[in-house]
Length: 163
Ligand SMILES: [Zn+2]
Image (cartoon, rainbow, N blue to C red):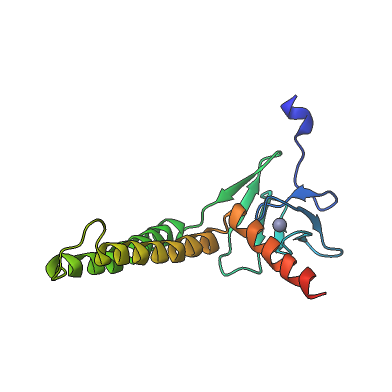
């Protein structure tokens, strides 16, 4: 059953979009490139290797087509870059919130409070704020489908409300 639905990557049929996983990509006339009707990204095709590469993004991500679905192809420097992204993410989340928390421990309030102290609440807010920045960073860097689709939906709703 699986083999009947398998088909090679070619310019004369439509495929699911590897970036947003919502739309379909179709070949742009007279080019060796695909465009997505949902997220509008453009992907250059390498039919010999059955791969597409996004050309209008800061990250030149590549996906390989296995006849049924896309698989992200990691480049030579992907490993180092991923480590850098993770390291930045951890530092961004831990250091600022840790500093706020530490200052609360080193300089406790003069009047003892019941429940969560002001500095603990402030540390939690700091952590949450930095966590959202980190999630945005990772979503943007890896072009996570859920994130890309949400971004397109927000842009579309803004566009349609302006009409
Ligand atoms: Zn798309």
